[in-house]
Length: 381
Ligand code: CAA
Image (cartoon, rainbow, N blue to C red; front, side):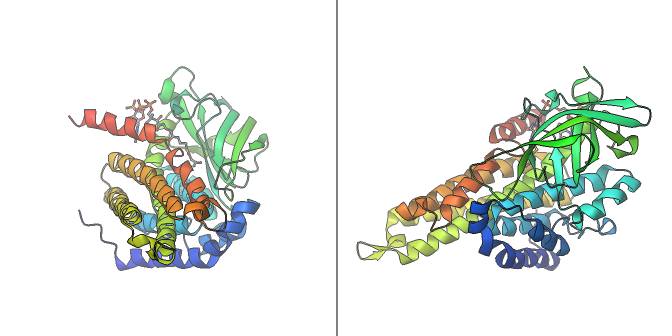
C-alpha cells in the first residue's frame, strides 16, 4: 500500500506545523501551569481548516482526508498536546455528524463546529460507571411526542464545559443492550445540562475534562444521528477513526520529546564527550527513533486504509496500541537522557511525559485495543 503523502496533504502538514510553532509551542509551558483553555487558538486553528480536516468541503471542512488529518495531528501534538486533544475530539465529532446525520442536521451543526463558532465538539459516551464497557451505559432518553428527554451523567468529556455541540449517547430501549442505544446532538447550552465537575489531571492541563449531568434535557427527534438503536455502532466507527487521531497525537508528543533529548544529548558533555556518543545513551535514542518511525508508518497505513474506504478497525487499533505505548516509552527515555534536568520544569520533557500518559487510556485503553485486535484475529480465521 502506498501512503506517500501528496503535495496537498503535505500542505496541510506544513500549515499545522506553522500553526503549532507560531501559536502553540511558545505557550505550551505556560498553559501547563495556568490550565487556560485555548479558545483563541482553537478559533485560529479552525480558520486554517484544522478542525475539520477530513470533513467534506460542502459542510465547511477541508475535505483533505485522514492521511492529512493524521499528519496535522502529529504536528499539533508536537506543538501542545493539550490543545491537540480538543482538536482531535472536534474533528471526530464533526466527521461523525457529517457522515451520519440527515443533510439538514449535518448543515445545522457541522459548519459551525469546524469554523470554530461553537469552539469545540464533545463526545459524550463514557459515564462514571461505564468506560471501557460502553454498551453498559445508564443514561436514558425517553420519547415524549416529538422530543426526547435525556437524563444521566457523562464522564471524562473532553472540552465538555466549552463545547457548543455534544454528541450524547443514551439508552432508548432498556434491556436491548447495544441495540438499544441512540446518539443525539445536544447543544452545549441546553437547559438541564450542567458541568458537575472539572477533573484535575496529571497532564494535559490546557484540555478540560468534564463530568456532565443531564437532567431531562430536551432535544427534538431531528437531533438523532442515524436511527434510534443504531448509536452504539456509530460510536465504534467514530472511535476507529478517533484512534488514528490519538495515535498521531502521541507520535507528535513523542517526536517533540525525542527532538529535545537529541538536542540535549548532543550538547551535554560527560567524561569528555557529548553524552549521545556514549553507547548507553545513543542506543536508547536509536531505539526511540526506530519505534517512532514504525508507529508513524502504522498510523499512516491505518489512515490510508480509512481513506480507501476499506475496513480499518484493526489497523487503527494496532496503530493506537503501538504508537501510544511506544510514545510513553520514548518520552520516558527523553526524560532519562536529561537526567535530573528531565525531572524539572526548566525542560519540556516532564510535561510531555505527563501529557502523553493519557493517550494509553482515552479513546479506548491499550487493553481495549488488544481486545479489539484479538477479536479481529479470531474473526479473520
Ligand atoms: N465498527 C462498527 N461496528 C462495530 C464496531 C466497529 N469498529 N465494533 C463493534 N461494532 C458493532 C458490532 O458489529 C455489534 O453490532 P451487531 O450486534 O449489530 O453485530 C455491536 O457493535 C457490539 O459489538 P461488540 O459485541 O463487539 O460490543 P462490546 O460490548 O463487546 O464492546 C468494545 C466492544 C470494543 C469493548 C467497545 O465497548 C469499546 O470500544 N470500548 C471502549 C470505549 C472507548 O473507547 N471509550 C472511549 C471514550 S471516548 C473518549 O475517550 C473521547 C475523549 O473525550 C478523549
